[in-house]
Amino acid sequence: MADVRDGVGPYLSVYLKGAQHWDSGAIGLAMGASSVAAVLFQIPAGLLVDGTRAKRLLIAASGLTIGLGCLLIVLFPRFAAVIAAQAMLGAASTVIPPAIAALSLGLVGRRLLDGRISRNEGFNHGGNLLAAVLAGTMGQYLGYHWIFYLVCGFAVASAIIVTLINPNEIDHEQARGGEDPDHAGEPIPFRDLLKRRDLMIFLAAVVLFHFGNAAMLPMAGQVLAQKHPGEDTIALSACIIAAQFVMVGVAWAVGHASERGIGRKPIFLLALAVLPVRGLLFSVSSSPYAVVGIQLLDGVAAGIFGVISVLIASDLMRGTGRFNLAQGLTALSVGIGATLSNTTAGYVVQWFGYPSGFLYLTAIASCALVFFGVLMPETKGRTPMPAREAA
Image 1 (cartoon, rainbow, N blue to C red):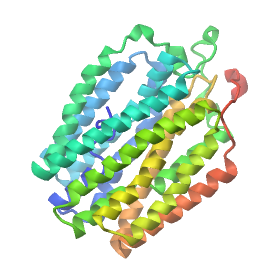
Image 2: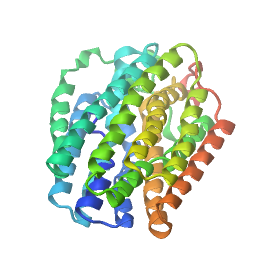
Image 3: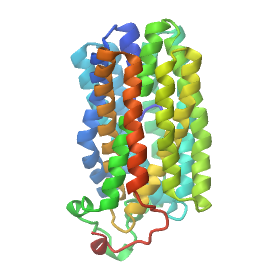
């Protein structure tokens, strides 16, 4: 699922710039279209995963929908068609992360969740690494469009593989964050969930994290396409491969640190501290080698976020029966941040140039670090409360 859940990601930016010659503003809108759709569908996706036992079917159907969207982009690379396909990809991608996390919690239980989520992310980054190698090779020697066909192939394969999970081994009450089997089916009301201060602070921090981060790699890809034509696809693949190598190790390290008792807050603060450094470095260098080296920092930040965001959501929702809805809200916050990042940074670049665009994102990332450090309490080790008291 690693190459399916995010579609073609930053390769779309390179494809539209290098092969279709779109301007930066239009590319920003195209990149943001999937995020807008994700914003609209995250909460329904979380509620759907919380309320259904057909989680395997949801994952398979969502993956196949993403594959179809990628096929439409490469066959009809016009503005309206690309925007529509990106919206379809964004909507389908909202289901996959909460459904996979729900299956994990339902299969192994809360006591083993830290290690399981860490391993999930390790496999996810390993899959992204393999996909980046294949995408870079195909894009360089066979053409950009083969990157899109690659996603379609993985979508079909993942839809087949997910059916091998035994549905009888999934505890569906536990999978949605419930603690008391005698009160199954009584999750906390959604309106009460929104009154939880710690959850709201965490979601705001997630928005700021992705506001300062999401557009950096697509912008770096545009710089490479503009200044180093012919090397853009292979260099972007090298960026992703290098970052994924780091993410595999970071995902393992986060799970190991959490199991040894280190709190969620210091781990997430490290991820937030990396972003401003990365933005500053991108603003002063456009060399393919430098861009690849700088992207290693994204491996640290994204590797931490992939694990710790699920664990914080699990901590905050313990006993409420709303674990997957909280993941939907987290992903909604990711989508809001990514939309703001891609759309606003695209126009900052168009008006003031790429260095100013990277400095703009650096300032947002610095705000995220201060906000989370000052306002967010530690969540590890919280005892579960009955749903009514939690509200």
